[in-house]
Amino acid sequence: MSADEPPDHLWQSLSPPWQACLALVWEAYCDDCTPIAAVVTDAAGNILSTGRNRIRPRHKMDGHGRGWEIAHAETEALHNLDYAGLDPHPCILYTTTEPCPMCIGTFYMSGLRTLYYAARDPYAGSVDLLGTTWYMSRKPVTVHGPDPRLEPILTALFAEQEIHRHDERLPEDHLWQKYRKTIPEGVTLGLQLARSRTLVDLRDRQRDAREMLNEISSRNSNEQIGKEQQ
Ligand SMILES: [Zn+2]
Image 1 (cartoon, rainbow, N blue to C red):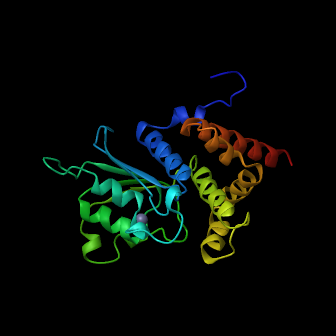
Image 2 (image 1 turned 180 degrees about the vertical axis):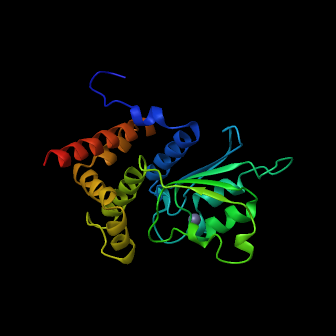
């Protein structure tokens, strides 16, 4: 790393499953899919399977494709898991975004019992469904999240992408009203990144996920410092 590159404390602080998730989030972003990714590990942290969002990929932006609306990261990671000879109970699902109803159901049915998510999803996030029915109360499932290091950054990536998709404006729909209320710092960061075109530039220069994270986190910490000095 050269002297003028931002420090990568955040990247270095992430465990390998989170680094893998961030690499897949960036892959999804660069493919114009919603930036959400997931990995399954064994109890020791070895990565067993991966998934990322595949809705509306870059090369097929028009219309709808088969299965696109349910091409979610967690469900893909759990589909990609080889269950032959595997005890799923000690395995762990890491996902960058709080699972939707479909993905929390898939997770619950898969036999995994531990879930980590990094960013809340105030619109479709459904970890609260656990424990709401007899069946959904049976298994000793533990959920950890959100992760305050990653939540604003992941929210910013999503917001930035939506702004570019909607004539450089963030939509005023229910989804973004909820995001503005729940994770305002992430939305603000997304607006700043859209204006500066930082992520578009990084994508066009084919920079990797670590550089993307360094760039956003240094910008985010500068914003925090700026706020504290006001
Ligand atoms: Zn989902």
